[in-house]
Amino acid sequence: MFRSTPPVTPPPGWWTQPWYIAFLALIAIVPLIQPQVPPLVDLMGHMGRYRVELADPGSPLLTEYFSFRWALMGNLGVDLLIIPMSKIFGLELGVKLIVMAVPPLTLTGLLLIAREVHGRLPATAGLVAPFAYCWPFQWGFINYVLGMALALNAFALWLYLARMGRIRLRAALFLPIGGVIWLCHGFAWGVLGLLAFSAEIVRMRDVEGRGFGASLWRGVLHCLPLAPPMLLMILWRSGDVQGETLDWFNWKAKYVYLVSSLRTHWMEFDIILVGVLILLVLFGIGSIGWRQIGVNMRRTLGVACLVLIIAYILMPRIVIGSAYADMRLAPYVIAIGVIGLVPRTTNRIALGTIAAIALLVFGVRVWQSTDRFAGFADFQEGQLAALDHVDRHARVFALVELPCLSRWESPRLEHLGAMAIVRREAFVNGQWTMPGAQLLSIEYAPAKGYAEDPTQVMRPRRCRAPRARSIESSVALFPRAAFDYLWLINASRDHWPINDPTLKLIWNGGERGALYKIENVDPIP
Image 1 (cartoon, rainbow, N blue to C red):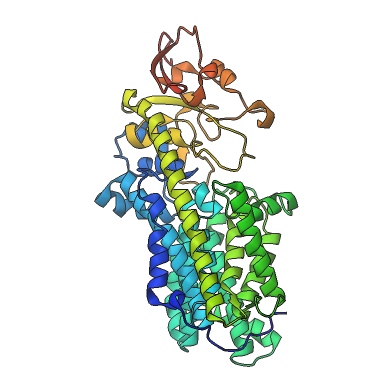
Image 2 (cartoon, rainbow, N blue to C red):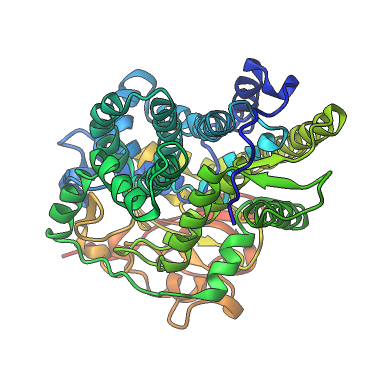
């Protein structure tokens, strides 16, 4: 397995020209141009945290509703970047520009790795482009996907410096680079370490001719410049971190996450595409396939892909309280395998056809995402019109009607309520709380039990968690004296309260969504 392919650079073609990587990176931005706020599931919740982070110390956000305490942890990417970006562009545009940078950076990282390993981009390299909009990105795990984009570019630099024989310079550069990527997201730093270690093993074997044991040992030594963040992790974990690590070897979930790696809008297209790519990677890893149309796998990325597969299998679903830990890794396992592929054929027509197909597939994904993102954004802004009727610094209880999680395409509304924090500096329920693992905590005691995530999430009875409330029970039970408004996001009219003397309808979104002013209640004593 991993027979070394002949050290022959792939044949040249239009897909190997310098403009090709830049072109793919630029068109990757297109779906995010129109939306004022990128319609990613968790992003608006994070934006609520950024507004608290940036608030004036005298704002009710910090004096009454929340507290924000900086701490050293491996999950600070956008939390740090938004400070200068907001001063220049404002919060919403600053976040949008950061998010817009992630897909092109992801692509440049993957394609530069491929070019460094192969010597020239193979015709199959463009097949990796859809991973710029992988499922973790769609979920809005923004610190993680930003960290991974930086880690991929850093790995390309790691390979380049190794090829140039600049090992000492590489060690000096990656002392700070590793720390920066860990600060952005600890998982991304871990993936960079696995990729670098895999590459060093192969380099020791193929370039320096060392034995297997010596290659492992020297691979560890060469990766030591990436190790200092381990000390930061020890300090982090020794603090007030209460998140658990659990749900190991959940095979059903791992299967779903793998086939959902490119989960976006069109289930059949997404599953067929990821299935074909997984099959190609397996052909490459096994060095099998038909001689004229088959593929090989470069040893450097073949070993890296295998190491990431092992990591994916061993990784639990929840790490330090952070859910979907293994799901976040799944797309990058496949992507590293894809860029390791090189067609066996040298026929220029066949190679051009492969590259054209790859470009066409990415074009379909960009067109599809552009259309759907525009639709999501329009609907979200329609629901956000309710905020025009909300007083600044008010207290809002938000409920979001959502479909079951099993639905392939998410409506991207789970954290839309947090825009009340962003645009009105209001208190709203739905922020994440985890001592030691989140910078923000909720201090507004009157809303206890109706303040944190997921109190805002309302799903159908058939897929609701056992103790989860319905819209009706939440409306009936929430402490009215603790809030000024009830905001029903995406809620159909049959869920709107009627004949309630404490709720006055002041805005409705037609068939979906309503805002009520809370009246005739005794104030909090």
